[in-house]
Length: 154
Image (tube, rainbow, N blue to C red; front, side, top):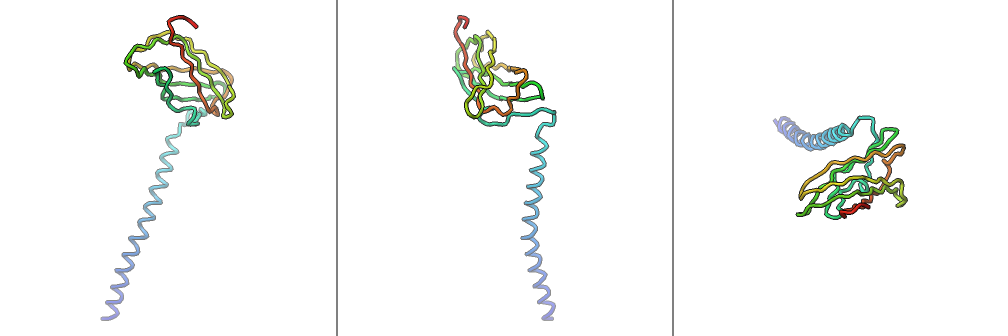
């Protein structure tokens, strides 16, 4: 009888130990699944993406928010796309703007002169894209925006 009790106690102890071993195994499986999901979210469209947070961060210039900034390179040309949003309570007249792209040493890589004349109503947004021919901007670090809101031309 004593042996039965000892064996029963050992089984109870072993069951408790199994619980403690099961928890790390479940955590490891969850981590592996999370890594797989993150990798699957990376686009597989043949494009190279600029992932520098200093480049793709949201910016505000003269009451206009530039957000959803993306920069891709297809092996020949770069494409910078973004959404412009008037965050003020007033209409803003856009009369051209410049996008200056710089590297990590703050050296200018290119300047894009965007020719646009449009009035943005309060809270109105505008999706824009600028193609840069023959240059890979996926390593660019900074995007400087210079907006002209005068009614006169530049």
